[in-house]
Image (tube, rainbow, N blue to C red; front, side):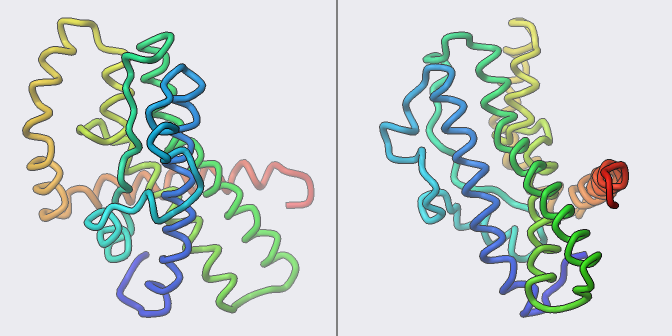
Length: 209
């Protein structure tokens, strides 16, 4: 799916900027909705991609297709409803990535249906679709500090929550092992195919497709 083709890597840059910007903005905006203005106060509730770049996460996305952005500052204790706020704020980022991935696939079908079979713009839409779906899936993995861990925490009882938080100190090592052993790709890419098939099925139900 992803390789070291210089053209593809070049196309990933604008796709990456779009994907991580809407991801972090969605987190910040949802947090603000639930009563936490931390991101807004620190100038992170914006659509400026530079303010959301994480050096290592960016390199990972460019090279292997999944990675992370610099998290926006969020204080869940400011939420007017702690568990509900934590759940929806955490899910907001992956949710908008899934939405943009779906819209990219829809646009791709429209372009191909209109007779466009090749070209850089078509390649860009493909990369944008892939990157958004992969970014969403990666962030839903329940390993701290990824969004999936916070979503899981919002459902855990207080007793289990304490045990889960003790694992946070080992989370970076767990992620590193999963990446180096390629086990992460073995999890993410099959799920990507499932999501892509689901999106294609939904688009196939739309009039004219």
